[in-house]
Image (cartoon, rainbow, N blue to C red):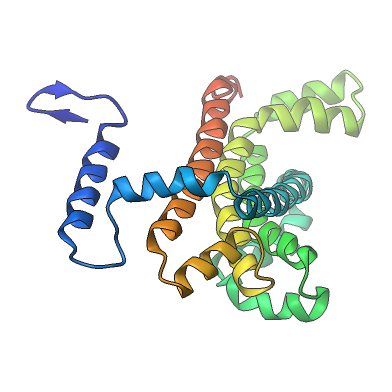
Length: 250
């Protein structure tokens, strides 16, 4: 960001928004937005409580399991769709449909099928993340130079060797891009699951604080959630930049 020709550090915009938040909070325009200084002070109070630590563990467990299954299922599915035209024609309409559909409407169905526990929350998280991972892995495979595949066949590579040593590595930039976006969608999925299926984790804290009008506590937990999601997303963006040279080599 540049101001009057001077380049400011990348996080300067956050300082501007933080200052604006503090001004609005101090003005008392609405009880919904307390001062940022009060939110930060509340954050340090909340972090050390057993309720927050339990909520963090439950949310991290559901989020990690959901992202794990989304990657383990989504990446091979996308690669096979990119390899096989028949499989692509069979699955692509469904993948596009679930990607564009309001998945929150499926939550009651998951509750009936899998109950009100952690299993349904993990499945919800997986469903939010998996479709974009499949599409990106498929797009990465379709960009692979056919000479790489022909070379693998000419050297007698087995299908598994070609899968792991050609397709996965050549499509890695798109795969990581899909995982990065899928992680962001998984954050939405895990919170929606915790709010609608079983009031646990951060969903329980959001419900408790909002119902009791503890807005400083509400925003403190929300900042933690945003910070975690941003950190994970930036980590995958860093990995994506590190392997971007694969795209030019294809």
